Amino acid sequence: HAKKDSTGICFIGERRFKDFLVRYLPAQPGPIKSIDGEPLGEHSGLMYHTIGQRQGLGIGGIRGAPEAAWYVAGKDLSRNTLIVVQGGDHPALFAPALSVSAMHWINQAPALPLRCSAKIRYRQQDQPCLLTATGDGYLLEFDTQQRAVTPGQSAVIYQGEHCLGGGVITAAQQSLAAGEGLACG
Image (cartoon, rainbow, N blue to C red):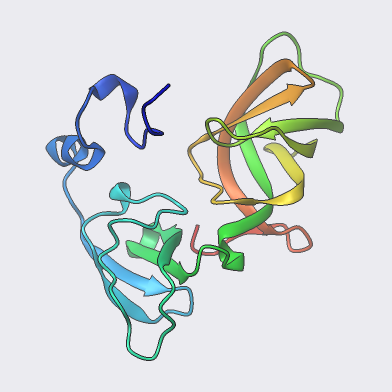
């Protein structure tokens, strides 16, 4: 209980996440760009960064820019580019919905659409949402926008105190009207 929240992988023991990855995955450096496409620096590999991350970007003060911290808003895998925004409350860090695939139900799949709650990170409070089926998975539409939705992590679905199941987040849905995720995500 006295330990701070983990940012590593539980099965690798007490070692830094980046040190572990370096041993098994070759680094692929690439550009760091603002959400507007302005070059800001270089990253050592996209796999070392996660959506919403603030630390370890290596971006100092930028002439003419506010002094607010920089945060990872997305990854453009096809261009090996890390997309960053300034300020922890930047709109690009928030999404009203997310797509989920590889859903696993504990007992049986519930009737949809379903008013329920979900968690998209460890120790997060339950977040009220609407779960609906899509052609290739599910959509979770939240009552309040969620910060740092990260593809590849889990979304766990609850009905009151009961865990119904969960799946893998495939994309943050930035605009429900457009039905598309963040272009760089």
